[in-house]
Image (cartoon, rainbow, N blue to C red; front, side, top):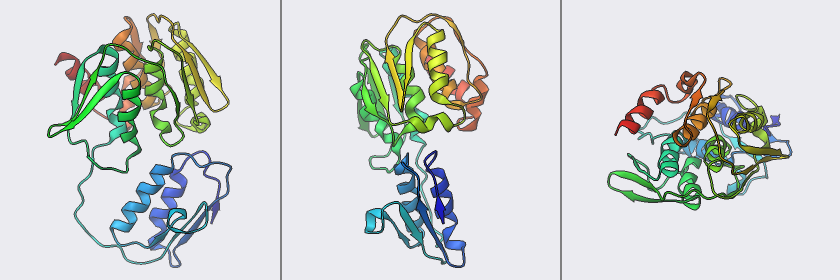
Length: 268
């Protein structure tokens, strides 16, 4: 099967997950110019192999941009489900923008989740982190620095990183995320509009955003029914008085209790 998955790796993952049940398995051949979020495909392959599926991939010596799944029965097994590390982003960002500290329980020491990249990115932007027996301890330094980063493999983190970058002391360039124009909303256009309407200075590039720090002011941050936009607005609201999130309930897509968790963190 040939498919252009340039807009989302989820098209490839969905076909691979179905592959063992097809009479002849499945061969997925990506024919687009680029393929974002490759770590998510690697996660899919790892999960399939863990339950007994045979998967040939480019990394295992197969053709570039081609994945093959052999038909067959899958094995039942007990699994420990890791926490969703991407959903931890706004809480880590909260510590970064306020100079505070948060603990994310059960952060895995080893993981294939792309969200683990947050440790590196937010450390470069001014925080520090340590894995302890209690989880990931992340501490903000009181300063936020700009970053030049390729987010092609972790595009879903872009809204939260853009929110932090809008509060930084130096410019940021977020690259490799042109595909975000086809997500829940056009996230590049939405982030540009919403941050700029709070007084920011954001411009779209061919494949991302360039963000120059400016003093922000209050206002309504629209979410476009997009959970990542809602949490991005909440991050800015910690540092800028008078920011109101339009329809924060849209976070229910991935984190139904976000408002309660957020207010609970602030109360603590």
